[in-house]
Amino acid sequence: MKNVLFAAAALAAVSAPAYAQEASNFGGFKVGATVGYDSVNLSYDDLDDSKGGFLYGLTAGYDYDIGTLVIGVEGEVSDSTVKETATDVLVDGDRWKLSAGRDIYVGARLGFPVSQNLMLYAKGGYTNARAKLSVSYDGDSASEGDNLDGYRVGGGIEFANAGNFARLEYRYSDYGNYSYDGFNTGIAASRHQIAVTGGFRF
Image 1 (cartoon, rainbow, N blue to C red):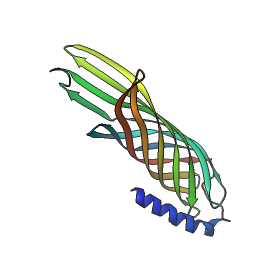
Image 2: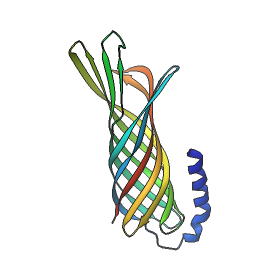
Image 3: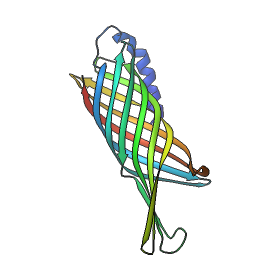
Image 4: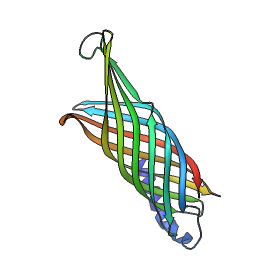
């Protein structure tokens, strides 16, 4: 997937000059809704496990179209259905559940228009994800949430026409090692997402 995006970006860089003086549909403010597939990965030493679920959220931003390039800023608030459950971890009968929560992203993107209606782009920025751990045993239960800071990179293809836009993108988020009360647990968290976004420009 990454190789395809890099090849597409290279093609866009070559093709973009032909449209340098034409008005396109990629400038201005935008708002939209996002849905897609979310895969959260946790790794520790030789252990590595991923869990998939449904991604949904809202996005808003502004793009400045200078002809050969589109430079933009955007923010996104999303949530996920991803959760992992394990039993008999410490003692027989215990139940552990780790749930992915809301994810806030703020970043920038660089677009390469290949026509008045089609653009390839790359993006990157800061992401803050919420995770919740719940434990139950013998009728008692407890839960605790925490925030994970990290970075996100990605890219995709966008179509825009008559004030509407739609895009398909891949993004990767890395949250580094999870720390609890200042202690580095050594558990590394990351996620891969395929997202479809549709919305309006004005």
